[in-house]
Image (tube, rainbow, N blue to C red; front, side, top):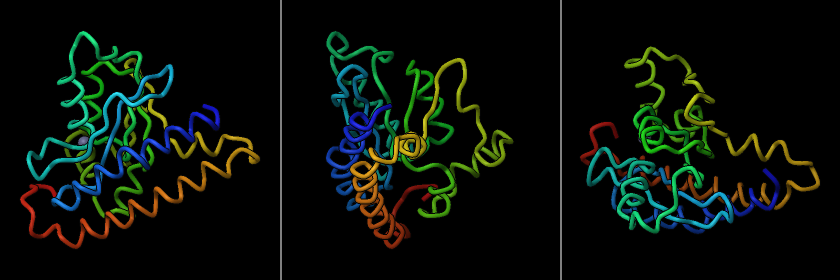
Length: 196
Ligand SMILES: [Zn+2]
């Protein structure tokens, strides 16, 4: 993926997903968000955020899929023509939901290790271990159904001369998520989310 495409994708997190997540976290939901965009012009079809305060299944990805399937079936794009963006590496439920929905890809900003270490939310790795006997989050990252991509690795692959703009946006995004994380962790004891 080239620099212009990565810049556009990062700006979707910054300008579409993060503002929704800031509202969600203010209501007590988690810090995760997602978007579905068109492969051809990278335009946003739908962006959403975690809404676990309403329903513990409304992870960022699940809530985005719910809203995607509420769009008019005659006009919404085919899943195969879309890219699935997720702020954080999808949990086992969301991996399956993306699979059952027929997407052939997903792209994430923060890997499981960051979700666990930097955001203090250990459930993704714990569930993979406890329920599926998968250690260290090592699911099949490229398989019959889809290929997953860590956006940070795509940025690392850019030539050095093309990295500056995207790294600046990435920095801004990471700062915003860390602020949200502190806010969520500070307030989470009072919420009703089963795995908070
Ligand atoms: Zn999930």
